[in-house]
Length: 142
Image 1 (cartoon, one colour):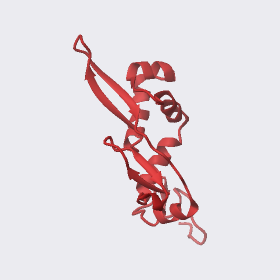
Image 2 (image 1 turned 90 degrees about the vertical axis):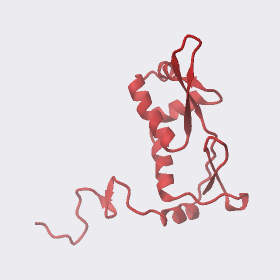
Image 3 (image 1 turned 180 degrees about the vertical axis):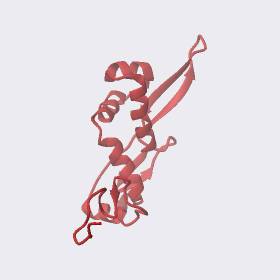
Image 4 (image 1 turned 180 degrees about the horizontal axis):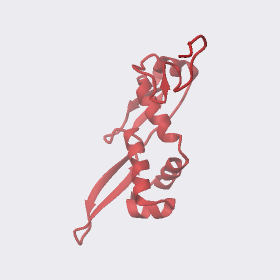
């Protein structure tokens, strides 16, 4: 799996190497996978498909509160999957609109293995390659 930013808003294009892409870092992949791992965020992406939507309308359509929506939108923005733009209405109100940043994913085991080599630290949910709180084989009880 390879990616490149392919528009002025910073969207990801993930392609095979022959198409001119570059391998994403493991950290970038974790952000993308984390953003896509939640059903609310998948629903939000589906609601944004092909259009830009005011945050209040998006909250109504997603049937979630605005604070919860903002938390999910932050994760999607951090992963480079959506962008927002503040605009003023004719009566002077600030309106926040969101839209998808075009992206494409193509995964192969080989490219995932290459991206994993770039990880500088383990994901925060893990500690030394094992789930937190669990001892590996051979660790002494203290």
